[in-house]
Image (cartoon, rainbow, N blue to C red; front, top):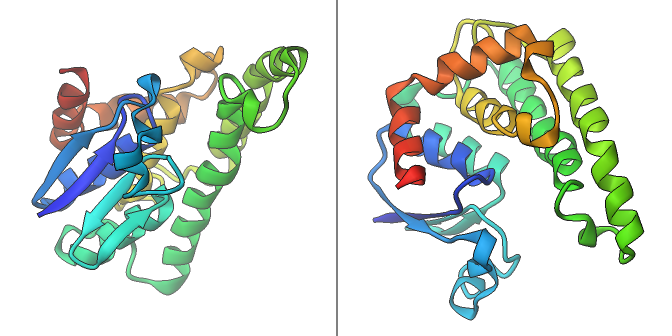
Length: 205
């Protein structure tokens, strides 16, 4: 059986949601990053990066959210979690890559400043910048990248659970989601999907 190593409140929620949407059989293993579980030797033996998510499959261990989401979509084609058209597929990957490489990084400056600097004054400067940098990212998503009613238009894909996950950090980042009505409506609608509700209940347990 597959195992998904996840941490509550992290980007691993997107992979968790994708597996549920796909109807996959898997075990969810809590790895609480808030208390350092991801740095323990037993977890580093699974993922030397010391990050979540990690998906243990019959083929080996897969890491990085975009890779896991793309794999789940291909491994469970009946769920139609990615577009079949090559151009649309590329656009979906582009959107998820933006979430991973830009939006998530902007968010991480709030509490992961040690990845880029060593002085506490630098950490504080990074934290002050987060509402602007994250807000700018979501303004671009709202204006340019969100098609509606789903990210890719009429088809629900793994992009939607990923956007939901990142958008759920907005308030913590000091950003008012009401600034982005299309993204905000999407977030609250995706929250009501059965797969998402199941994952959120498990995270809260």
